[in-house]
Length: 113
Length: 111
View 1 (cartoon, one colour):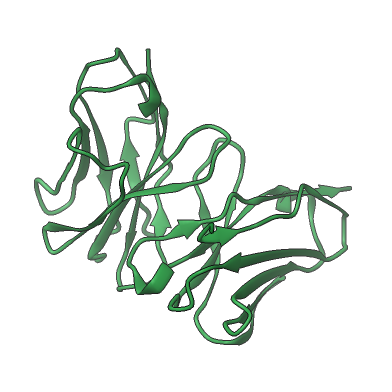
View 2: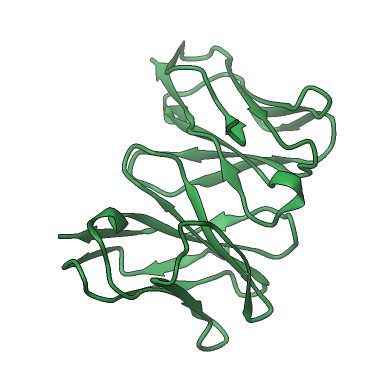
């Protein structure tokens, strides 16, 4: 069964450093997303991506964040200068249809020290 | 007003019983509704989707949607210890492509 994959599973970085989180969405899906979940809190939307451009973004997704689909399979989230409050689980998701079922990857645990 | 609310505290049910979870949402324009299961430290796993009023059954799970009352529910029949997890209600608010999640309800199935 196709699934969303994410790498790395755990990333530890120092405050102020840049990190890139990687995702491979399900191959025939067209809509891609990043969400985050701070420990003990709810899952929060960051950004959606369709047809090689951002279609929606939340207030969390400020100038420190960017997304890219560098090739036909990968979808990346870059945080330019990490802050302590960026520590969270970051989930990539994808769906084949607008407003359709979103399937989540296993997540990347980002720890900023 | 929160977009998606799940207000019940942890739910303990004996094995074999029915677990009932509720969720309300604020945006009347919402069109798509989902239940996800999340085990501790893991990612959300889709278990049910529902798009129209009424009931939808899939195995031991039944989702119920009432758009007039802005209410979604999930029933888990014949609860098993493996059902012990946090259940997340998610909605596409106002037809937005993104998902808005509730904070989740923890279910504990007691053998």
